[in-house]
Image 1 (cartoon, rainbow, N blue to C red):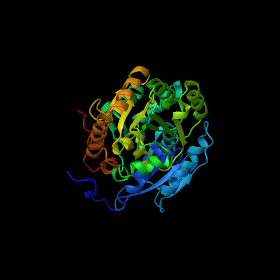
Image 2: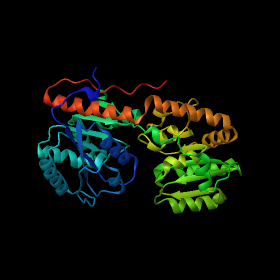
Image 3: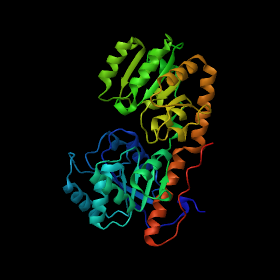
Image 4: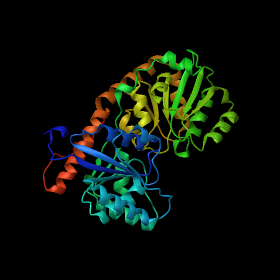
Length: 391
C-alpha cells in the first residue's frame, strides 16, 4: 500500500478549512499543525474563520490565506452566502469543517458554491438537541463525503446522535510534536516559578470553564492534607474568580498557583510531578497528549478520548469524572511514590512515541484527504487505516 506522500496528484489539492476562529484552543492548535505540516507538493491550505482570526493566525505559515467573515453569532444565513462567494473565488478541492457551527454554514456554502467534496470532523461533543437542528445536522452528516472524530467515544456519540452508519465514521486521533516536549530543564523551570525542590507539583493546563471540572480538582487537592504539595493551574477563563474563592474557602489558597494563559506550556510541563485532567467531557485532549509526551505521570477522567490515550495502571490513571474519593486517593498515592510517578511517566512517553506522534497524525490526514478527493474523481485509493485498538 503506498504511503500518502507516494501518491501522485497532478497539482496540490486545495484544502479549505472552516473554523469559528483561530483563538487559542485544542481544535485550533490542531488546525495550525495540519496546515503547516501537510506535504506542500501534495496540498495547499486556506482557512476561513467564521468570526475572526485570533492569536494562532501568527503561527500559520506566512503564505497561508486566512479569511475572516466577522460573524456575530445567531442564525445568519447571509454568512452562508458570504462563505459561498469565498468558495467560488478560491475553488477548493475539499472543504473541511470542524464542529457544529462551522458544519452548518460550511455545508450550506459548499452546496451553494458547487464544491463536490466535503469533510466534517467533530472534536468535542457539539450536538444540537433542538428538534429542527437535530434533524438538519443528522441529514447533513449523512450527506457528507467523509466524517471523522478524534476519539472512539466521540464516534459512538456521533453515531448514536445522527444515525450515520458506524462504518462511515473514521477515528483520527490527535498527535503531538515529540521534539518539543521532555527537553526543558526541570530545575530551571521550577526555580523560575518559585517552586522548592522538595515540593510535589500537581499541574493542570486548560481553559477555566465549567466543563474542565476544576472545582473537583480543588476539592481533591484540599483533601490531600499534604503540606509539601502545590497545585499549579495554567489557563485563563471566566471561572478564575470563583475558583480562587473556592481555594480560599478550602484553606488551600497559599498552595494553589493560578498562572493564567501561558505560551510556554512546553516548558511548564517539566515542572510537574503529576498532571491532572478532570474534565467532564473531552474530545481528545492536546494537553493530556503533551503531558504524556513530557513524561509526566497523568491522572485523567474516564471521558471522551482520555481512555484512548491512557491504559489505567500502565501509562497513567483514570477516574470517573465526579468521583472525588478516587481522584483524591490516586493523587495521594502518586504524591507519596516518586518511583511510581517516574514509571508511569516513562510509559506515557513511550505510548505517545508509539501511537500518537504528530507525524502519524499528519499521515492519516493526508491519506484521508487523498482518498476522499479521489473517490470524487472516480479513482480508487487506499482507505484510512483504523486507530489501533489499545491493549
